[in-house]
Image 1 (cartoon, one colour):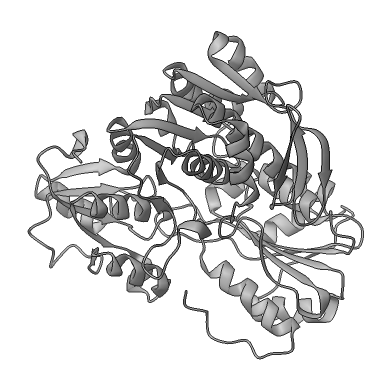
Image 2 (image 1 turned 90 degrees about the horizontal axis):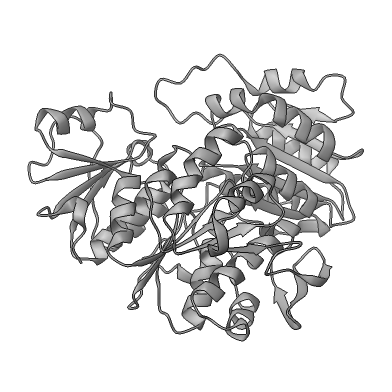
Length: 469
């Protein structure tokens, strides 16, 4: 498989290979016959060993992230938007006049090598893309899939689960909007899940999405999103809408803490994921499936068997009748959806939140405060962990303590634990049978280990070393 942006090149190095989007492309290139290497600060620090073991099991060669010594065979360096120009490998690549390719540019080029379905939006991208992929497989399309999350169906002792290698002509991929690069993608079928303030304000996001949608043969948009509705007026009859008032609308909906069932065009569907946001993700996937020519009956079978994604409402355990859920929610929209889903259970909610960066926390400050004030109910507790520090030259003049102070005067029980040990001890004291503990945050794989530690502690077991997957 030749990728235009890598024409004539075979030895590709990923700087920051541990990122979910980067590791997905590294596995894809390795499978397509490239010689792939990579480095990551997390690996050098001894973190996330399970992830790097799986990459090595697929033939990816891992080296320490350093300027020198370096592998002279490397012909091209791939970087994500999180990698700064001051990174030693970027400096060395430029010194050697090597080609430096952005992750988004590489993904866009991979998609041009196949017929493509691209899923973007500010929430639900991974789940929707995985649902489309599963429907495509059920409908005999055998798609290749590139995700920004780990799908249980695609996991194995060697595979991370964020890539599916298919023999068909279609490639289904999640396209991130967080750096604006979505405007450079030209899929055949473009899916936009929703648009809300996250990384950028709404006018900027709309400008990013216009070229992404405008170049597509068919477009899937939410009938319930105001920004999408405005975009739809500019795109004509190529648009298929999902949600209330759309072409693909759910009727006779029944929801509970484990999933939902609903009817579309008289056909009954069952979805083993709770929450109205996941119902909308399923409707978006069903709309995209129709664009692919997959009949609704095949989609129904695929949705009923969906195995879910890691850190997308993952029930880690229920010690003493207390559910502990691990979830990727980190933006106001996603936190609102996660808390609404949590409140489908009858007990109190203990919401543990780790903000996922200094810049996003500052940018979404007002929205975070409104979200917690409106969605942390009387009796619930909010536990604020310190902001996740991804390194680099970020302005660190803001903290979770500031966020907690911003909620003074609100009817919200909020605590900022000194560390995770104090958090776990507080949960042991407060949580009772029927309650739900919801661990939320992005990018930090150790949050899953924290959720597992909470389960062990609530069960009366000693907290162990982080689990190696």
